[in-house]
Image (cartoon, rainbow, N blue to C red; front, side, top):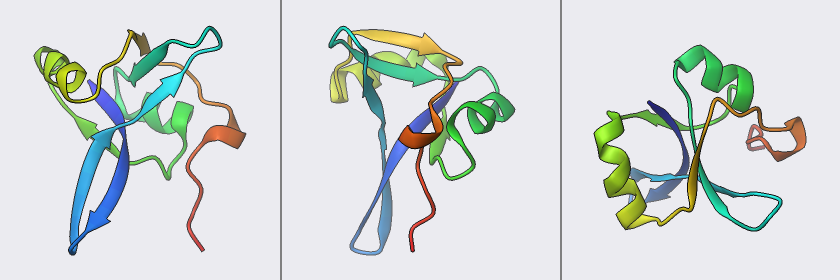
Length: 85
C-alpha cells in the first residue's frame, strides 16, 4: 500500500509519520492507495508517501490510532500539500 505521510525534518533527518484525515462525521481515517499513480492523482505531486505491506498497518494504528482505512480517496485541491516557498 502507498500511505500519504507528513514529512518532518529534525536534526537534518527526514521523519515520516502517516498522515491522518478527519471525516465529516468526526472519525479519524488513514488514507491508503493501491498504486503510486493513484496516490499522485488523488493527493497531488507534493504529497510525501511511504510504501508498506498491508500487514504493517496495525503498527501504524498502534503509533497513530485511526478509526478507519479509506482506499484510493481523492483529496480536494485545497486540502493537498503545496510547494513551500
